[in-house]
Length: 416
Image (tube, rainbow, N blue to C red; front, side):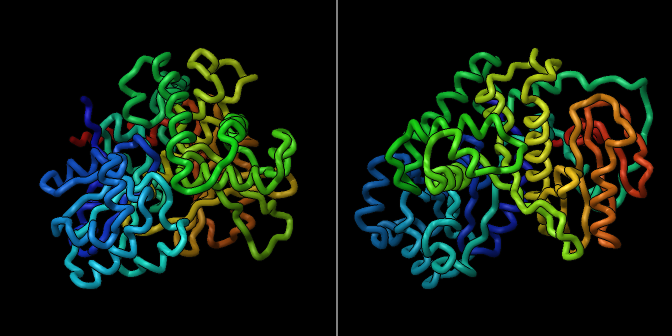
């Protein structure tokens, strides 16, 4: 079995040294359990996917927790939210660091009373699907270079399209799918979504019609990278708006999709205040769109928005590895000017645009220029990520068009 380096591991190790409860959240099958076993192989390990363990924990949460060894890993803890109060009581009795290492495939912070019960006792970390950098075993510094205003033009070859990009997008970041042929991976993705809907949804919500939720997921796949129009989705699926919004929230809680909020400027009333929706994994959304690598050159397909979601996810994962938090949003105004990803650190603002083309045109930097004018002195730079092979100037200070492969192998520092 191929084991990939997970660049979140140092942060988990650090948290276990000073925090009583550390929780790793992320979609099912992204490698949370594997990561826990790698960094703490001597810990007692229990998973609530085991029916006997699950039943015992539900019947007597307090007794279950009190019977455990001092240091324990509890996998898929969202299946027994009753345990969290018992964990709080045990931690209050003994606040020794690293006592509980939890994993969850649903967002525990959105479950009732979790924030209150473990406030000040828990550190939440997010494990994303494998990034291309982790697959290539290269330590990327694209985001650090962007935030330190250290991206520079670099013209080293005749301009050409980066090879193999469609294959990377369609493969996505689930470790299991990456061990299969493309055809078998598509089958795995379909079964994965079916299993999530049939088995995991009931841990966080009551859903009467699983087929409706599946149809909504398939429709959202067609709209990844687009403004989220809940009313339009409800109309298309002939369901109540409240039902559509509930289903989208369920998929969010399970880390399958996420809403990218709009960026706001106090100086402008012309900004669109609608979030964008992105799928977390490009392989899953490509499979739901029935996209294959040979469709890359067919401009009537949905590959452009899927590429955008792919890039957004790579950068979101990089942010999880940073010491200081950053915030993400998107920019769009009523003139249809947009920036796919806005990054904020403190008051500073950066923008990222994504283009499927292997060449750039002068107009491609217009969105970044508009964001710069709205952000004023807060704007520190930006990047236009595209599919060509050279880093090119955009005619704005600290703004560069960079090859998409800079997200994983632009700097070639081998790890692992």
